[in-house]
Image 1 (cartoon, rainbow, N blue to C red):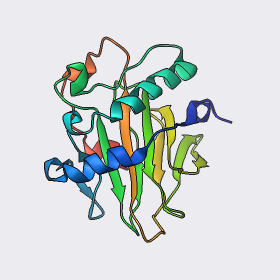
Image 2 (image 1 turned 180 degrees about the vertical axis):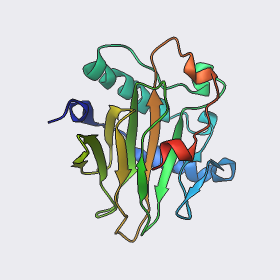
Image 3 (image 1 turned 180 degrees about the horizontal axis):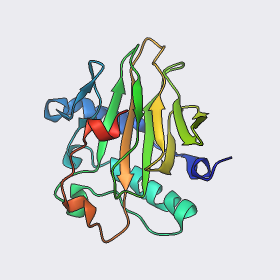
Image 4 (image 1 turned 90 degrees about the vertical axis):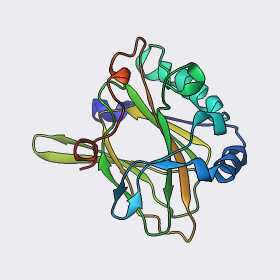
Length: 194
């Protein structure tokens, strides 16, 4: 297996996802959107103040990250005093998918936590190109699963073949001090979505 695929780690969390889902629905009028790809809002942002419960997930991700890189990492967010949050919600309706992309330069690991995963709603896939050939790795998306991976590793999510929405939280983890985080945080879909 390729070294990059070895930098994928998962853990099932004992967490009541309804708490975050209820907060997201309750404060949905405050959600902002980044950009559309294939007529789907790729990232949906809700300020940390409305979903403070995500802090438990981030603490677990930081703990799990030590198993991968042996250094402490953080998920920047307003609750820690940063000027913006480095997490977002991904909501895939039936028939929707997420195209191939990687994450921000400067982040060490990226993560996803699955809040709602109906059966057949799409697995996450990873790929690496070596010697002009693509190699793929796929893992099943499951509720309460926390998944961490190298931020430079290209990934996508298969089409949601269920009749319900799939909901997850994605985020990036950084080493301190974070110099690249203050240099503008907007994604460029040209760079990050292939």
